[in-house]
Image 1 (spheres, one colour):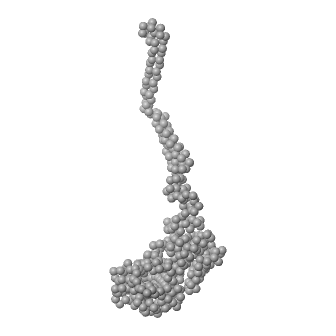
Image 2: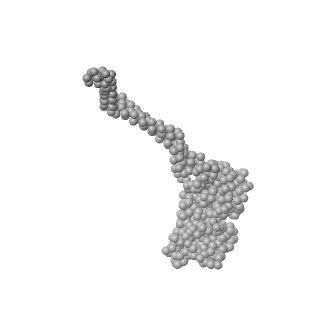
Image 3: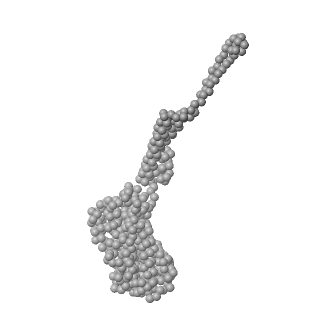
Length: 462
C-alpha cells in the first residue's frame, strides 16, 4: 500500500545507488510540461533506501532543472513489501494518478512491471537486480518496447564469487538473500551455474534477522551477501561483527557501504553510483525531449573495483596479493587494540632510525672512516719543528773569563718543511677515501634495510 502523508511536497531528486533499474514511460509526453511529476514504487522502502531515493531525485532535478520543475510527493511513493499483488496495485494506481513518469525498483517490481502488454505512462524499473536474474536478453541494446526501458548493469554473482574465491579461497560459501527473494527469484539456478566452475559448494541462507546465520556457522567458511538493500544497516553491522568473531570472511555483491559497515570486500566502486543515477536522469530528460524509451540504451558498464576493509582484513589475517594492490581500493583504518603506542608510517620510520643501536654503530664507523681520510691528508700539511739547548758554568769561572764564558747561555733552532709530492701519501689518501665511501654505502644500506623492515611491520600489523 502506498504511504500517504497529508501534505504533498516538492523535493530535489538524488542519485540512487547500485540498484538495478528498469524504466518505462507511458505514451511519450505530448508536450513538455512545466512540472514533471515523479511516481516511485519499491520492493521495500527502508530508512537505508530513502537517502538513495532522494539522491536519485536530486540527480534528475540537477539535470532537467532548466527544462521542467521536478515534483515528488509522499503520496506517490509506494512500498509493496515484496508482495506481487500490492506491486500490481501500486503500478495501476500511478497509471491512474498524477505521476507523469513511473520509476519502479526491486526484483518484485521488475517481475510485475516488465512484460506488461502496454505502458500508458513512461515507466522505468530498477533496484537491487543482479544481471544473472534480470530475465532481460543480455544482447539486446534497447528495450524495443514503447514507453518502457530498463537499465542493466554489469553486476554478476559469477564475477563476485570468482573474485571472492580468488581473495580467500573458500570451499563452502554461505549465500545470504532476503527470504522473500529466495522464494520469488530463480536464485538456485544462478548460483549453481556461478559456482560450478569454481569447484566450490554453497549453503543458501534466507535472511530474516542476524540470527539467521547461526545454523550455518559450523558448515561454511565464507559468506557472500547477494542482496543487502532489504537488510537494515544495524543488522548488517551486527552480522559483520559476528562473522569477524567467527573468523569468517565476507563479501558484498551490492555496494561499498556494506564494506564500510564491516564486511571484508566488494567488487563495487564508490563512484559507480553516480554513473548509474546519471543514466536514469538522462532517460528522464529524454522523455521530456519527446524521445521514446524503447530506443534508449539499457546497458550501463560499471568498472569492477575490488574494495577491501583494511581493519577487517587485518583481523582475519588476509593480505591481498601484490598483483591486486594497484587495482584495489581500501576503506577503514587498521588499529590494534592491544598496542601500547601507535605510530604513523613516517613516525615509525623516524623512531627506528633514531633508536636502532646497529644503525648507531654503523654511523660511528662512518664517522671514524671520515676521520681516517682527514688524517691521510695530513701528510701534505706543513711540519714545524723547534729545539732549544741551555748551558750554565760555575759563577767564579764565568767571572774570571771576563765575559768570554757567560754563566748562562742558550741556543735554539726552528725548522719548517712541507712535502710537495709523495706517492705513499697519495696512495694512503686514495685508500682512506675509498674506505670512507664504502662505509657510507654500508650505512645507507643499513638505513634502507631498517626502513623496509619498519614498512613491512607497519603494513602487516607487526
